Image (cartoon, rainbow over all chains, first blue to last red; front, side, top):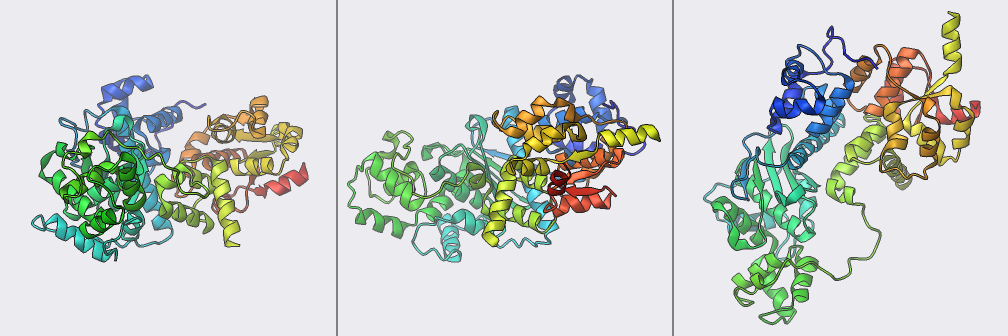
Length: 373
Length: 140
């Protein structure tokens, strides 16, 4: 193994090394020991006075949550000025290393998605409305429901609807439940939303609507923790985003009608509430509970007496979609396979793009070609 | 000159991950066993087909690679630099870039899944001789 890449041609872009470290807010003193080098040596790489070995580069990619090619090409800047709208005292610096890696992985997914779109010459048109701060959450939600042609029915396909409007949405498991969702509008990626895949589907759906509200009101890069108890909200913007989410996912007329049809009492059982919430409205039992309280349909304070209700009824029948596919979303998976089919990316790139083994990637490629033939 | 001919004659093919997996799917890992002296894979490809913890221990390809570590080759001379140069191009992943760099620098043919038009095209653009895994098996 050759230990030092020659300097005559700079293959590794030093600024990219600095950018990857900067997003994680790591100081050279934190990174250097992991590589058995001095902080000055790390800075030398970033300033292209010397270059790391391939092994060191691979280690940097692992530490920073990046693919190696991130250090070989100029990439769009990561989101800046993240607002922490959740746990008190939270900041980028205070997030655990593992949580920060999730943010880097999200940035990598957005970058990969943009790269594949560009390779396929796909213009991503963003068709989201924007609202002034003075617009009431109810008005904003109603306008969105009209746009989705949803009437007073449940919005069961919110993710697909938003992806169709140019929003990039991914799910990744977030360690220690550090946040529920993260959203930002990016000059090159467009609007992007990350959801905590460790949370239950109902909560994720609510977070999606909540993050959407931040995008619609131009609240900037927002990293949010949405507590189960609504009373614990922090700040006006979080309250507003929750209001939009409630109005969007649980429209008054539809919910009242459904509640009456079910003949539920003012203190419905946990299972009745969970069934109505998850199966019909795609939200958590808590979210529905608070909505029903506000509409005067169930006893005030009743929801707080319930712990986090997990649905224990049987899931829908049929073949299960693998977790990674759900997290990445149909649109990204389809774009990746299309890029392979059109000879824009290799099979290995399909695997790394989708975060699966090359065996799994080849299986997906075979399945798709069978379906098409 | 003689030495070069010997080297080329001994290590005859560099094989990528997709080809190895196709060979495994074709239940032809035995053909690899028979030609284990004639194939080379990069460390990255070894990871992708055998060392990745997600791969089952009973997997035939994993058994083949762990039983024949001599098929794994490290980068030599300026192959690292070539690897990064290939990887810098869009649409190629580290496994494919690594075998291309080795095939290019050692002037060896690359066994490739020819349905993978991106990898095949990229290899041919670099002047690497490619052959399909089916042809490789026929020649075995």
